[in-house]
Length: 254
Image (tube, rainbow, N blue to C red; front, side, top):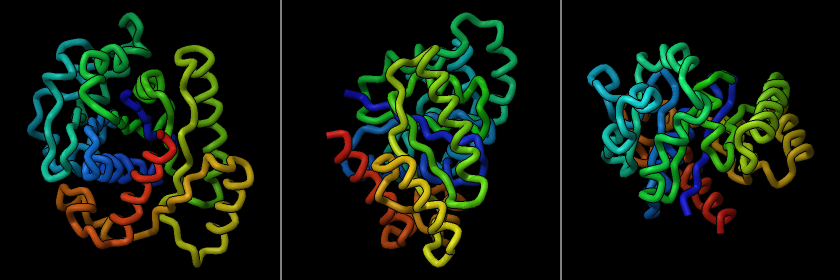
């Protein structure tokens, strides 16, 4: 059965795109069929997957408006070994254009249905906002992965996202749940980071992944080469952490 996971946090700069790319790559490297959907108009997931967003004439924008089938827009990535439905700045106008469309919150869900069985995992990189694009991601997802930094404002932002997920469950997608909270860019020497991490575990228990993504230069470098970190420096702490996360997700799924 296909598992559809939205990767979401309305706060920017928390490692959401990094997680989307490297989790997709890690799952693919252990033999899973993976589709990554870029729902962010910035197109960073697209560029970080080695696809030049400036050269695209078909993206998720056309998919959401019903102008292209998802099967016609998806691209294979190399060496990531996962498929990608890309995005670029054109997507920024989609929200306005979707307002007048029927079932505007489930456009992505309807578009992915014909190709869903082709994959073991579909990962959706949502934009850093609680908007109609994010709502489309949440309406199709079985669960949500929430990357977050262990810093002062993290818990406040998390509360807003949890409330949004509850509203989506009540109104659009009764099966959606929180898959897990992922601590990113973690520095164990930082006392505040340790304190926030302890608070997360206290409030969310086993919803907090055991895997912790460290602050790592190789993770920061890899997008500049259009590569997942696994193919930039497989032995780096960042690459090993995302492989560990992929295996943790597989264990919880079984």
